[in-house]
Image 1 (cartoon, helix red, strand yellow):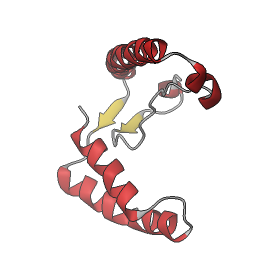
Image 2: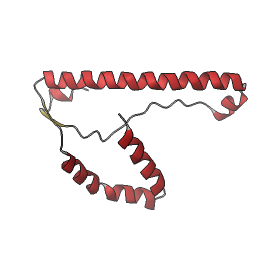
Image 3: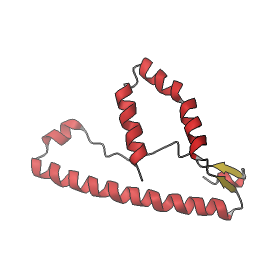
Image 4: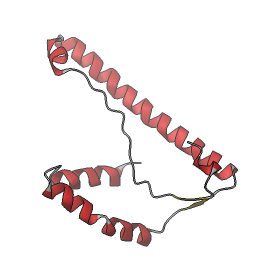
Amino acid sequence: MKFYEVQQYFTEVNYQFHPDPFYVNAAWWNSLPEEFQTIITECATEMGTYNDQLIDETSQAARDEIEASGAEIYVPTEEELKAFQEAVQPVYDQCVEEGICTAEEIAQMQEIVANAQ
C-alpha cells in the first residue's frame, strides 16, 4: 500500500489477521456427491496452506520494501504488547455484551492467534 511514501515510522504489532476462507453455497455443497465434497475439501485445504505460504512470502517482501525505503520499523517488547492487550480488553468485553461472540469464542480465537506461526 506504499504507506512508507508518506510515513517514516512503523510499529509492528500484528493486530490483524486476514484469512482467505473458502465459501460455497450450502445447498450446492449438499447436492454434491460425497466423492466431490472430499476432493474439493482436500483441494481447498491444500490451497489454504499455499495461501499461507504466499502471505508469509509477500509479508516479508513488503517489510523489506519498507526498510529499503529508509523507514524505521519498531518492534514492541513483550511487556509493551501485554500493555496493548490489556488496553483492548474492553473491546472484547463489549463484543460479548453485544452478543457479537461469546467469551469462549474469543478465547478460542486468541489461542489460534497465539499458536499461529
